[in-house]
Image (cartoon, rainbow, N blue to C red):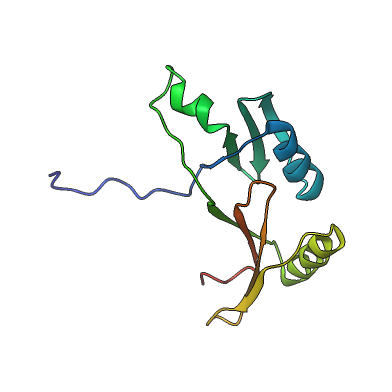
Length: 136
């Protein structure tokens, strides 16, 4: 075991979801959530920019059998959360999701007094949008 600690990590640079259809995923994340698509290889992967970070969406069969990288994939619903820039932006996002006809499954107020709400993407992944300050 090393005797000293390495420097701290700054943030999560990329988050992965495993999807069934790149076109359907792109339509949702680009069209509904307004995340710019940076890369798409149909039937394999689609990537989006989220601020300075990336959301990587893979068809699991592709990432499981890709010889370039270690195999990585998941099954079943996964969860990711996006933070709104302000409380006003949080309210606007909540209204936008409702107008888009996407059911809001749950909304909660955290001990910090800040809120978050949950909804699903086309593959059934649990998505959350938080007000700033949920994590202090």
